[in-house]
Each structure stands twice: as C-alpha cells, then as structure tokens.
Length: 160
Image 1 (spheres, rainbow, N blue to C red):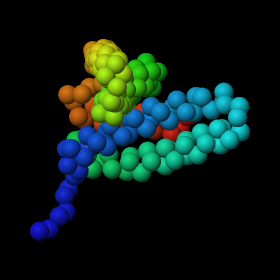
Image 2: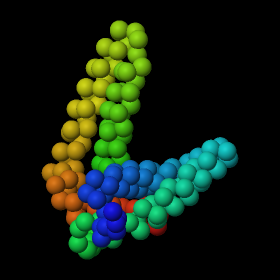
Image 3: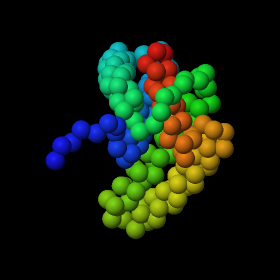
Image 4: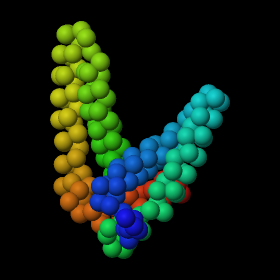
C-alpha cells in the first residue's frame, strides 16, 4: 500500500494545534518571567526551556502548510488572547492532573477533596473556554481560523 498523503490527517492536525497553542502560550510566559529570575541556575534552565520550545515551534510550524485547510493570514497581536489562552491551558492541565491524581488516591477524604477540586477545575475550564469562544479568541468550530491563530501566536512567541 502506497502512503503518500497530500495533507495531514484531521486528528494529527488537531493534536499539532494543541501542542502549538500550549507551547506558544508558555513560551510567552517564560520570556516575560525571565527578567525576574535571579537564581543563575534557574535562569539557565529557563533559557534552556525557551530555546527548546522555540525549536519545537519552528519544527511544528513547518507542518502547518500541510494542514487540510487553505491559506492563512495573520492578524494583530492581542494580549487578551494570550492571557485567556494561558488561563485555558492551566485549567485544561488542572483537569487532567486532578483526574490522574484521583486514580492514585487511596484515602477516601483526599479522594473527595480532589473530586471537589476537579469539578471546580472543569467549571473554570468551561468559563474560560466560553469567554474565549464568545470573543472569537478560540474559534473551535473553524479549523482554518484555529490553525491561523496557532501560526500567529507561535511566530509572536518566537519573536519576543
């Protein structure tokens, strides 16, 4: 069987979107925090992380032209989108982390506490997602626009 696709598959395109958005948002945060870090070893670790994430984004951006959508145009930067995306990434990661922690919990009272906190994390995720969606910051039903935003944010994060 010959395997020579003309574009990426939809599912891998969406995974690429998640990775790009996550890394671009965190790269901006790392770069903004760098000036505040006084400990030389931690500063060095941040530099290493910044360089690694920049490289990751540059590599991932090479695949965006192969996504199953048309051309994209970049728009002006919007810090609201960054801050909301950063908060959304935190909420999404919190949901995942609580779910994992619950599966490792043997103490009933701790399990109950983690379940309560998981539900709060799910609520926060929903509120942040709808905040972004209603303002056009997370066009989750428009793959073309979603990927265009990824390209814009990754390039902005690299150029900071």
